Length: 273
Ligand SMILES: [Fe+2]
Image (cartoon, rainbow, N blue to C red; front, top):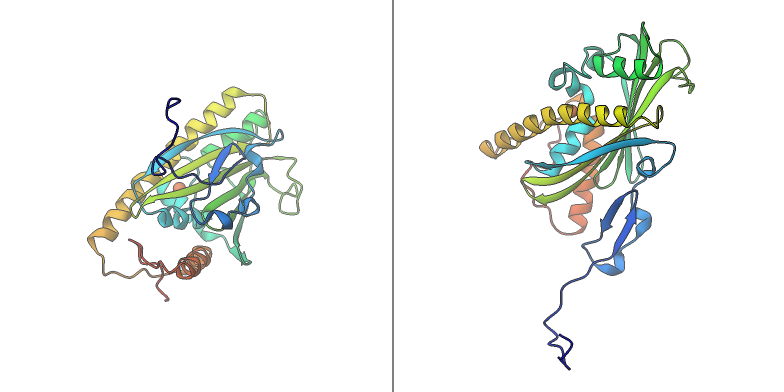
């Protein structure tokens, strides 16, 4: 209103601290004096020249904590993603959980197994005609409050991948960050990054489409899970051994929500079995 000499003080919109990093805009909705860009989780693969990939955003019909639970326990792949990345060795193998103040790591190695279809295709993209057994890994990195980056891949069995030599394998990073919208919906940003055949747009598109299909299976399951929780509001969650990683995530969130004086959510936060 260039002709206006005085502005009505109510004619303003709120503003928020924003940082652009890793191809995302990180918006701080809380007390602006508390905004600290150093708290942004490490998602450097999204912006690195050593990685290539693409992703999508899912408007997920569930509480964001259900997405975190799902990503912290990848044995669900055996049942929910049986045609692509699932295999029975997932729930047969041992896993290890570590944590510090703001992060949780769940590591699983499966030795000398057949590669499931998704991973066999990726191996053959890098090593045409590949046949034989693989060592497979899933290393889940949770960063408070709501980011999970999963180091995944397979390598020709016995070529030293568990000891750190992944040269005979293919490596991806599943980048997930989730923003709550309501008690029963969230914005789920994901990307799949790889560190081989970086120049192939065909592989980028195939991987994005492949993961799109896999995550569509998760979405249907998460929606059903939210509906079951809503239909049975008095049921408690029971934690099984496999939830060790997810329990640390819930504890960290619970502590932070308590500190903010808002311990209300559509999902029972924890059940201490
Ligand atoms: Fe899944």
